[in-house]
Length: 169
Length: 427
Image (cartoon, rainbow over all chains, first blue to last red; front, side):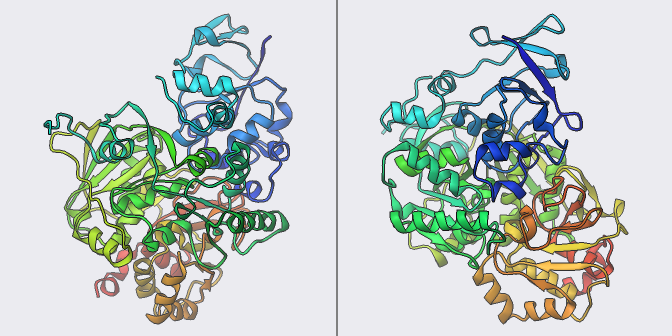
């Protein structure tokens, strides 16, 4: 099954977590689906309305920089985003997304335009851009990250391992 | 005992001592953490996740604290319910909570005496990196990671590579550590230190007060850094000794430790620096923006809300009036700072100049209350972030600068060079 790519029109690099979900909302809204209605509101009004479940968010360098708010990946996931695809991710956002089971992929996103149809091939670390007939190679995901993702996030991983943090890299 | 072969950076050493094995950059390790904290923007998710983990109890209740600081006192019902959730959790699990009016989590952690040199700290707030000025590995994490540490006393860490930053030269009058921080961010950019540790050293840093060092450590995350660590010199050890009963474990880098890069800055002739809207690394020397109309000025935050910052601002504002049509808001970073500033007469100076004094806390920095700007307004602030919408209105423009530049700009109603007050600042 393939899904659509969404590029933010106004900003490609350094998309910070304040832009993903503003402090105005994260302090007073605790319901993830309510938060999801405000993603990227300060950059593009009603952005969330464009997203269909399973779609991809496309960005450039240093996606998710700034504040440590976990409401950022939480709101993206609740908005229906299957994976964020960017040239690179900021550190805290990367961990937060992983912990919530939101897939992040690093690759050269110059080959993906707004509304391109994409398909994931995770076993081969590949994104197929069906609109352009291109296969884009992604940076491999570490063994530990794969495990956490396949368990559905860090909470489930922790419970499955009965509170023992194990790492096999 | 076998001779130590690996030469390590400060970050590698602190993570090694908490993993009980020798680590190098790039390795992944499980480390015991010395202290965890959360604030009112992150604690509701910490509590939710902690409860999902199902351990039922906090691993070490004396090593966790929550702070009601970002949106405090509460401006609406949603925030009030989060504050209540935090208070109830604190009572149930016998963990520390700092309620409204006490101040910003980071300043209170520094003042608390609970943490010391060589510690490993995780905080659910990105500016947890501030404590690096006291020679510790202190890093911001998300709420789930914090919940994991809360339940287990540990977490997994990727050992970062280190960029060494050496700062040379005597700072000119009217130019401060905030200007140095902005200058470094301009060069490294907001992504240049992603996943890295920063080590700060050099004669300029050695001469600096601890308050001034906190400003630089605080802004490490604006370059993407995991932490920004300083050496434990006499000033650091004295600062800690006055507040903490715990034995410090000062950590120095080994001679021959491996750095990703070494960068040198000479600040001898540096002008005051200003970050322009809407990115922290969009930095220019003050001459390029002098005269820009300013509607709102904010002096405070975990970057620059300390006594030394207030002293500088007061020496400019004394016997002067804030420009008609410009608002000045001042928020002390903690209650102790507030009290000292009252005793020293700074608060009286601010009030006489026409400032609005806010209670100790984050103030309008994060856009939930206490001075949300109007459409089209220009703000100059001592905070660390100027993202579009940061202060609650995406149609406002935020400039970042030192307390001196902000105070001078409040008087003129325009961005102004504080060096014109050099006779006052030299005293």
